[in-house]
Length: 216
Image (cartoon, rainbow, N blue to C red; front, side, top):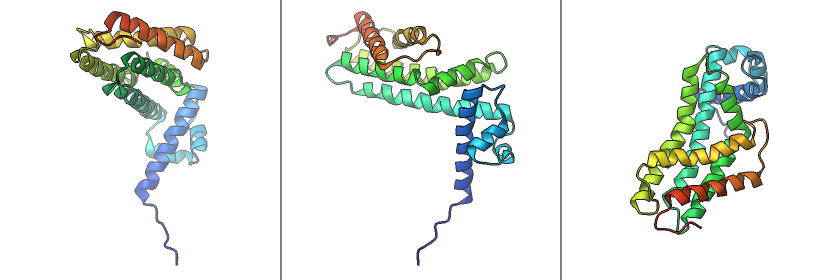
């Protein structure tokens, strides 16, 4: 006789919460915070409306937890990309360009655009939420790049006296052109354009900070 698999109540509760948060981000991204309603979020999550309130206290709490969760995920993706610079190999220029291209793909993605748009829409009402989202995304990315650039400077592969400034400038070389080309998230940027931005950013960065290893 086949044994019956019994799902623990705790696991079921976690799965429902995850479904609610996934649905909430989808609805918020589609409608904006003001126009989104908890009933629609519940329907998209496949749960009853009271179930949403069993997990999150109100609509604002739902927004906060949802955006911080997505920001954590986006920040983790960026961190994983930057970790590849721990062992960049012989061709540092190629490794930096690959890192730049992967970071741009994340930043240019629909989820990242929606996250920034939703957070900035609350900048006057919930400035602490905007700061929290930034800490989990740009803040974490800057910290990871600062660490990597510092180690590359110690090994003589970059000429850097202040890794934090270099990290900030590297990101600016990526995000500035991306915001311009995407018209602040209102236009889709193609892969060819992202590659061009990554290549230009890498050339400019290495012209300023290239160390013992020739650039490209």
